[in-house]
Length: 207
Image (cartoon, rainbow, N blue to C red):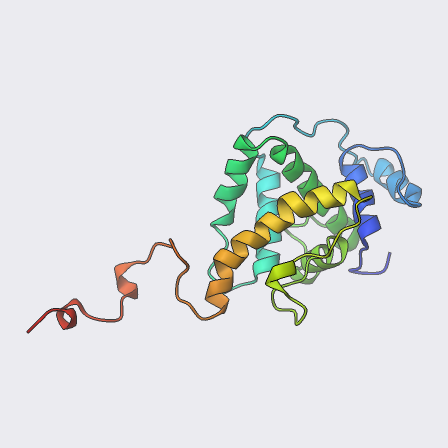
């Protein structure tokens, strides 16, 4: 694999490894063999029931959001409560989040020999852009009406990640950070401190 490059099919191979799968996808036997030699296959410990996310999954998802949103665009702390709530309350989401995070870590390890959260920004964005087909907000190709590439129906796991994780992240982005990028100081519902008001109270009262 060339440096900092990943295809959708390769991303699915990493997913198979993260899930403990031993069936090669599209000629991925060498990748799976390498993972077995490095003892990175996680076997069958992907959680099946709703519940709290483990710390590594939370950190990885936070790094994914940060790579997508960028810096200085309103922050990313408001995504974590959404992931946490869904993991506890929405069937299958904890499993999806965990498997997706492990897939990101396997891809980052192969591309930059580190975890996804510790990988350089260009690696983290390349995995999203090339492996998941995510169009970045700062790209000339970004279209809020079709924020992610149209998946092939036969890529069931990729489609599951896309529909239940990527699309949900983009929805939050469009309702929050995107407004900051458009020039607003806050998005609807965001707490605003008194120091952000620019008109003194005295000027709003009758003399």
